[in-house]
Length: 200
Image (cartoon, rainbow, N blue to C red; front, side, top):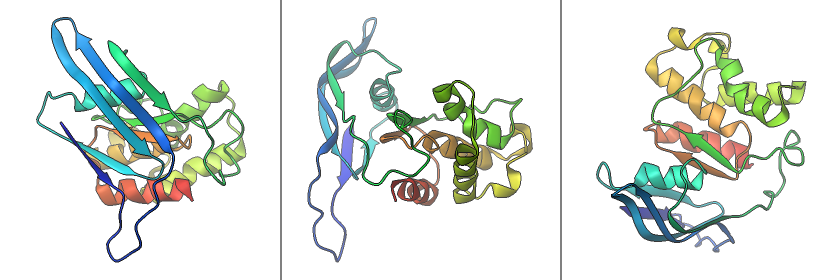
């Protein structure tokens, strides 16, 4: 497995390295007799875009799940920055910033919820079910960013596969995550547009 970190821009001054947002030291993950990850170390700084490359079964998804807390490491340490981003949006109240946004290979939208309600699901879980007008407005903004404003009241079975993926992308970013993990093949232009918008 290889990690590609984009830290410089063409025809521009080099970007000054920022503080680490994520540090992984000597990480190991085992599933019974299968060693999925062995002694992996990686540092991701705030603002970096990192891609994990490797053949099927080399541990890419396992690493992302470990970062998101969905898989328990066998050894090593994962340290994430708890600092709030500079100039957080108004709706990101204290304690409401998600640590990690996760987008799975499959959209995993709840079939009985509309597109908008699926996007709002992480916020409902975070705040115990109460959704205010500011949160709803932010979810609508996310749907606009992924081109689904006209389908906010549609159900998953009424969306194409690509539209479902975009809805899942909006859902992963609606809670203003400090880090974003995706095992999906979502369109890079869509992913970068949403990520850039939520950081501004």
